[in-house]
Length: 268
Image (tube, rainbow, N blue to C red; front, side, top):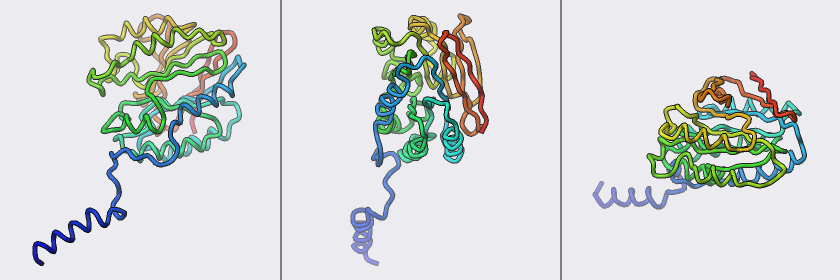
């Protein structure tokens, strides 16, 4: 075949046959629902308005575990005592656009609203950009009854100091929230202080900051893939780590009216 023939075939393949070729997984084109967190925060706040006892589920690290995530959704939907779900991050493993959409579509089958925190694997390639499209900004907060949830990006290593992680300006702004209806606070993140991804130069400052929130109850994280409870700073503030969903386990927290809380490890 002449050289011109090869060029013609290449041209047709590249330009004429685009519909036959899967788009690049990092191109960031998202199909389906976007802005999940903002929409579901509105549902959570309405659902929990006026409630003094809050019960929610906490999961994490669903990457490469679509089947297990589906089983979790079915198990949670069989309950009628959960107000909402928090996903502690690592929706994706490689930052692939489809990974975010797969988990979104599975989690959208929940009968209760959910929100998702940014994980370190979610930041790979252009994953942060896709995460923001599908779920929303990495730092956010919401009210559930009289409890304020502050959800933070703590994946400092992934940003190589190009952005402030943790974002103390955001943390401080949230402290200025003067809404009287909330009385206590829970801080959630993917990576806990002293983990590999956290900027440990600011770990102690981070802890001092978050303890200024109204009646900080405890902190939550994912990332380690095992259930853990730690008092990292020996100051009475416990950090609860949820297992990876592949371990077929999740946590349920109950925040009581009397400023106490309890947790339960649930296998499914």
